[in-house]
Amino acid sequence: MDLRDRPRDAAFRAEVRQFLEIHLVGDFAALGGRGGSGDETFGFETRLRWERVLADGGWTCLGWPTEYGGRGASITEQVIFHEEYARACAPGRVSILGEGLLGPTLIHYGSPAQKERFLPPIRAGTELWCQGYSEPDAGSDLANVKTRAERDGDEWVITGQKVWTSLAHQADWCFVVCRTDPAALRHKGLSYLLVPMDQPGIEVRPIMQLTRTSEFNEVFFDGARTHRDNVVGAVGEGWRVALATLAFERGVALLGHQLGFVRELDAIVALAQENGRSRDAVVRQRLARAYAELSIMRYNTLRSLSGIDGPVAPPEASVAKLYWGSWHRRLGELALSVLGPAAAVLESGPYELNAFQRSFLSSRAETIYGGSNQIQRNIIGERVLGLPPEPKGAA
Image (cartoon, rainbow, N blue to C red):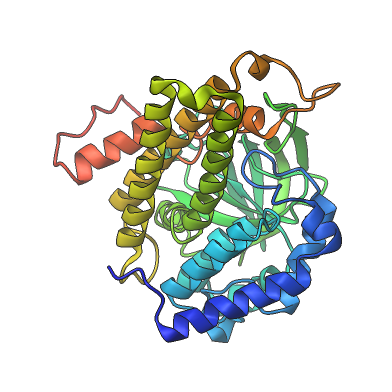
């Protein structure tokens, strides 16, 4: 790979920088890049306004085809945008689930009517989405989904429970994996439904996290309804569509996260130099290892994205998820080591954390959500290394 900008790439990078310099001011700049993973509730209303500024400037849904309101941007251009966005300390995006997950899924698997109805509001930042996958007994293994949907005339009636649903309390719609054929086993008989959140049959209960924020929620469906046409793909093909959505989750946007990781590591190095911890040989070694591993992460992500059109291949997606989740958890631990005894002291009352403490606490979940490390290792072992599949219990 040649990672140097070509002339047209340099021109695109300059365009991104100019937009951000002009518009990332005032309340938007005051957010200081906050609102990312583990900090999604911070400055939400301001970030929602920022989403619409991006949309008005044509900077949402870059990779979508132009016929669906996107720019048809190349992988290289999308990488450049995410790099410049992170470098500018722009706010965490509030529409990432719609733009990065559901939108591409609809483009590949949705009906013409679904694309016409749902893609424009995502691009404009006027409708927000959440993801209804995990359940109390179906976390990393979606084949255990028990939430059911039954036909009642022109509608589906949904009953069940989802958990760890990011930003469900702020979402307008949810893409929900349901069991539409109760007689089918495991991944068979699942369907992928689009369900409006503002209705009597849905209750959202925030989950208090270690950070004392509530990005995640429990969602209870008790006779919630959606139109019969709001099934993505054919009825019973929800497993295939859901896997595609997960693959999109681990695509180009991951590079933006990595630029955020660079900022975190730079801040830890600066702290170590300031408080003298950098004179400790063990700390220096850990910092050097974190830097080397982050560089490997970037190059491997770029390599896996080269030449793709559609979802990242599942084994490559699993390698990326296993790697970055584990790395970021170790970085959080390193941050507290560099902080020393101050790591146990709150920034201020009643429970105000500093950036290092927030990162440490939120990163504990990153080896679990989006598919746990154990599940990723199973996928890599079976699909890459050709090892025998893990024995499955009786369904």
